[in-house]
Length: 101
Image (cartoon, rainbow, N blue to C red; front, side, top):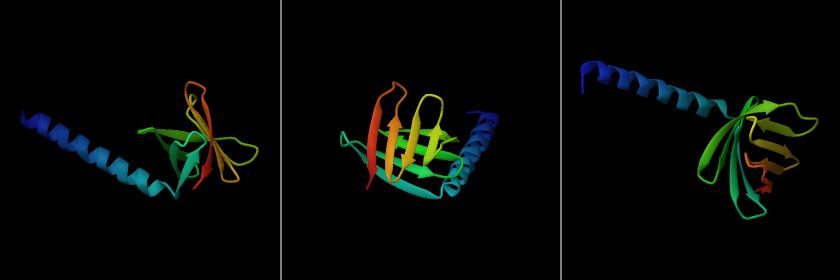
């Protein structure tokens, strides 16, 4: 491996590490939900973004306008939480209703 590649790899690794630690500081709470099909979803919340972990995948959703509760979307997926009940809509339109544990 050339010296230039080593430098680029090191710089990229440092950037990714700082992004990860910055995101970790950004989230204020984490909530685990159990869905009606017994699947589990974990949400890390902040005011402007939510990290959604479901079926060994993770997405970042941005805060969206909601008349009540908290709503986040990425344009394909959506979570809407109201009174400890979460509605999780996947990219294929499947809707999961989940309760906080």
